[in-house]
Image (cartoon, rainbow, N blue to C red; front, side, top):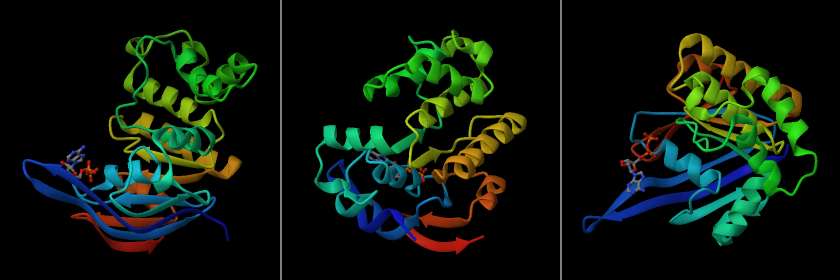
Amino acid sequence: METILNIRNLSKTYQGGGHTLHVLNDINFSVEAGSTMSIVGPSGSGKTTLLGLCAGLDRASDGAVELNNIRLNELSEDERAQVRNRYVGFIFQNFQLLPTLTALENVMVPLELRGEKNIRPRAIELLDKVGLADRVHHYPMQLSGGEQQRVSLARAFSNNPRILFADEPTGNLDAETSDKVIKLLFELNKEAGTTLVIVTHNLELAAQTKRIIKIKGGHLVSDDSN
Ligand code: ADP
């Protein structure tokens, strides 16, 4: 089996107010390509920090992060951005759409960054897939929370990521919309073989992934297969 993500002795500290905050301590796990996994645990336990390190959004204080056999620690910020653009999709709890761009333009951004051609039809197709064919020219402000989250899904899918990280993808959504978003995520896993790594408080969602790891006080305290 192929390993897509390998985390070794990972630690993260922040300096502040004259002391060191140990947010993550000696975390170890690896993720099989094509698998699905949830990261659960209490608020403030370090889940978002861990996801950001795995995705190369941030840099570890100690230990190693290998994504698709690329060691992220040694890379510059620009090089990490290139790795993300090639292999990674990321879904933020608060969507993080660009407010001055339409839904369509938001989805086109990663495609433009990759220098792809014919990006407009591809972006329209992606928005159609998430059920937003009639919202392509809307600005984020004109969309509901669920619609914004679906635009952010279309954006995250646009580079055919090998691995998709989602931080509380249903955190701001009602039950019905949250079901739609979950369905789209698992479809992507089934159809494209995209690995899913999801931080969630939603136990129903966690139960649908093959594996659940639990973080508490910056430590990995359990690792279970469903
Ligand atoms: P969770 O996602 O489990 O709620 P987080 O990873 O968001 O936890 O945060 C873990 C801890 O790290 C919290 O105590 C938080 O205050 C702290 N933290 C997160 N980001 C920073 C930062 N940029 N600077 C200092 N402390 C931070």
